[in-house]
Length: 623
Image (cartoon, rainbow, N blue to C red):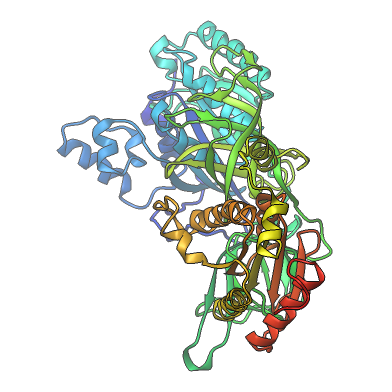
């Protein structure tokens, strides 16, 4: 006979840990900590399992259990342990968990952060979010309902997210009369399924979460380990502090009050540690400096920072570093940098993911436009079938695919560093997909190069040749980009250059970059998308204007190497000239003229003129 609920009491050696928001939502330096995600089909009892873990380990705040029971009584509803987690009123009214809930409990071995992930098919994206940082998983199956569609999907998701420590719980054994053959049938079928997706579960055990059987206390009808004993037996991954240093830059703050000239780079240290004076490199820009100070509000001065802590840094050398760059330790193992990578991707968008269409990639703090370049295979999460001929990803499909970003991004393989190897994909401002990076792929084939090739093949030419235009205008065409950290200096040089060329009788035209934001079918874009789109539009426009024989001049601040490469590619087969004001030039991306920030615009224009003469863009008897 199963034990009675009244016979269950918390083990005396278990310590109490409050779950009041904010009080304990931080790691304790002297205790091991583990993240556990609980998944399963809707109504199979995930939240009840967690409620029991909290209650039966004595980890609830004082009076919390009684408070929930009183609330249930006032609403004429029977008490359920799941209500300990379902704090949102709309969740309780619907009776399903619609977002991930985080709670805490601890045993003498370690502290646990345990995540209740939604089981309803409509909330799978929340489940992916919840499982993003999990090191192990509990997967719950209702003994009476058996293996359901989402039971399989969640198994696929755990495999895709790289979670290998999985304990399967066959719940509600009381509803099948504690029939062990029923349990064995589910165990055999589901373990076979998990094996097909690359997961060997730690074990499959029968439980009754509502009565607390085999959660913390072993039932009389069962001889194996309890859920809690299995949790304590799970091994942790390599300590985050022992991994290479990774700190994605979240934002950059500049203070000016009281002559404060600090430029503080803020972010969360995901792995590794860093000390004052150590050299760092920012990727993918490859800018380098060293740590001058570690900053924090109302905190003692620190000389070292390690994984899990959000902090700020100042550098010994002022650099223009954009949010989204990945700060790493110079000389240590560095992440991959590529615009193409192979990934496991789970698609949750209402609309299918279509090859070639632009989406937004979120990888740590980096944001980039991304396209589905190739579909290698699609897995049916229910039937365990593989399709290698699909041209799009439909909702709830799992795919091994090649993704391509507009410009290279820095990342680690998921097998090496999880935090910088996981990503999500946004479609129309909603999270529509998530996955892990398996390997970097060569950049030789790209959507951009394919676009340029197709554009040139379809380019419709008039009856006037380029040579005819050059003879008429007495000059060749050129795309000139004045680039530097100061927009004012850039514009001054570019506008003066346009006027000097025009006065000499050449077809010259200056375009202010802000014109692109308000024309050419401009639409509502966020800051990231606007910058990326303006570079693309500028390159396409340059291809047209230079083909018409003009000298096209523009100014833009803080181009990086990949922006230059994009402009060069989009302007081909016509030529481009970069005028770098007060910064180093980049090779392999067109001609470069260096201009110091101290030079007057007139002097800079004279130097640009000499280059145009030497390259025979204009005759050497003018300007």
